[in-house]
Length: 554
Image 1 (cartoon, helix red, strand yellow):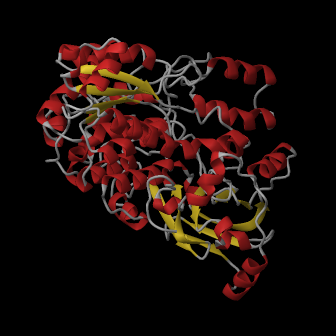
Image 2: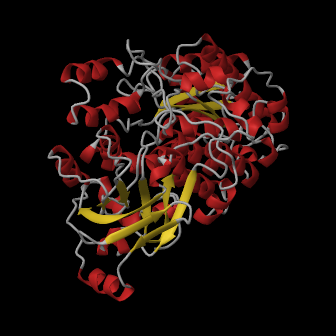
């Protein structure tokens, strides 16, 4: 398999023998299993067990498994200062898995991953390595049904309850009960946040078993999928079918269109840019918008509707929603688990719950779930999830209230200082300015919980969570730290947001903006340890916020 030659044969064999591998094992396809298991991330805890079933499949197919670990931070736990470290780890996860694979000369890879930065990081690694590779996600949480509520709750409901308790809509006792029970089991959060958006995206690429992401983590079919993944990766190695076979321009376009059709996370925009770069596919922010803007939105899950991920699975899942947009898909792209996209869709027999998955003719929105905004506040673009915005807020004009950090904004929320009609501006939260491009998920959820999402907009050079809804515009480029116009905004300045015209405008003369930018001084956000390297190397969100995989000279 090319791992060693006659000179190093003895050394390699000796070291492999020391951990229990026999010579005949080394002569088989050696499959690296990248396991992101840990005890503190519910989306990743199931992988300790699932890895064993993947190994069974590899052994049964005539391969040799070799498991190793990588970090897997949970965005939900990594709030405030901890959030600085989450996005940088995406590239670190990719790089550490790549380094291990190259150093040990693995013939193929199985990536066990579920959550927000881990799935895109491992897809980046698969693209960079371009050897046979497959992905397995853990499956979703069991939704929590509270007596008296018409539908089970998910993690996004817990975030929004912060605002509800502050506004007096629920009691402290109810809030504590939500804290204790909403995350009812292991698995990915039962909403269509970034974790599940990226898992479903991997399915559409063909690298992940169909219907695996929305499946409950405890389903017996998950064990069968794990064994199937183990067997299939050995087959791909023997046939020499590499990862980029399933990461072409056409397959990425399929993934983008499906994510748009199902109301995916705004973080997806940044991650797919990064994945495309690693796969050698040219993709700009305007390309992304053009690919998705004509796609009908046929499904919305929490936080944008009452339906959770298990509802989506029972309603027909990925194949059902793909079938509704099949006229816009590249149907002849291959799928790693066999056949083409056309054959995958033809194999679906239904039924489909039309309350959850609409027809294209009865779509929720006719023109995509995302809107890429431009204007003097975002010369290189900004991102908003249109399908999560109340139509009343598609057009909003209001005075700016400026904050230099997420913490400043939350202090104003807690002091009840936010007034209807305004535009909240949170800056110096971009990739360099944070550093780390923190997500404003708690502020966004608090806005909804307090009932202000129909009168108050929020814009930032940071990002939002897949669990966010409401008029939240993120990824503003260039960011304030790099002299972007958002650094020139002052309290009281009028800002216009128009989702139909795709406009984000500061109503201040250009010469005044230029004068203010000359006077602007960035806050001294500390960048200790790895964050210092990240701050120095990272590119803008419009280019995927890459720092280890974008070799373009700064």
